[in-house]
Length: 418
Image 1 (cartoon, rainbow, N blue to C red):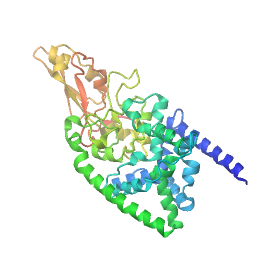
Image 2: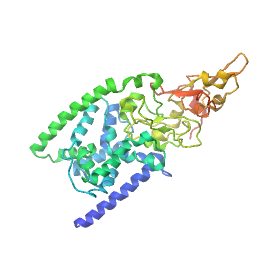
Image 3: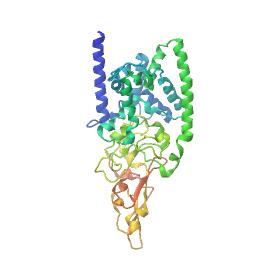
Image 4: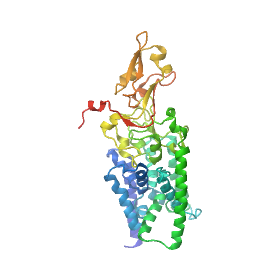
């Protein structure tokens, strides 16, 4: 087979896989869990999440793709980059379109890779948001129109690399991508390079490990800051997340959960009020109603976000587990409440609570006033989304908690399951 035919075949395969990646990520009539296929191919993200959690999060089935890609790297090096990676295909399209200059001569990819590994050693997988498959998946909320301004920030990597790639061809893939370096390293296990290359690799290993360990230790001590320690500022995380610190470090910001949420309540908030490790992570935002995108509550019958997360930042849940999952606690803001502040009858929050967590406290005029039973509340946000109070903001709001747990109140046993 001549080189021209081989090039045609390779580009056909790459474009078909790129189209498949887009279709699977965007979703539609396909099963929702298929959205995690391409993000789950990365051995870099998978290994980082595995080491940080000290267990394999998705089960044996989802362990096969990253292990297979790593084995492919041992056999053929960057074959994944040249044939499979959808982001690599995207970056190859404008390659050298404007010029063919080399303005970045050093290759930081080795340093970035070993920094990630160094951070793994202390259980904080920093820089996993640089994984190219997570970066590609980050574009899908934009396609579906469920993006938020803060969610576009990390997505700017793609247009920036497209522009730079038009000047220096494939600059991301050849000089910056830590996953591409991972495949190069896997190839060297089968076919070691010359001694000079080994010496350079050794320097990168030492420098990267030291920098990664130092950055991870600093993040544990300082970067998490008081934003996580303060209960008043705890984020409301998707059901299946463990705790704010774990979620902030394991989440690759692929935004598969943002794209999968049918209520559009998983959004990327601005970084203000969040620690550095929490910047640009997806969180739950409850607003007025579920009639318009970006407003609603966490539906008790929905487990989409837990099915698409490729790293275990959001663990898989069954419907029974979802109904028992405590993700937050509602709090009545009495000065804003029509019943408490104005002595008016309004128990809308109680009427809409599916868990019976809104109790009543009668006034001296026998007007019922809402009180939250923390043991029954799941933090789903239905009460907040339906609260009619507007004068001083919502009269009932959901606050984040330190650790998501399961309730043992027997509520889920009220439902029948197939």
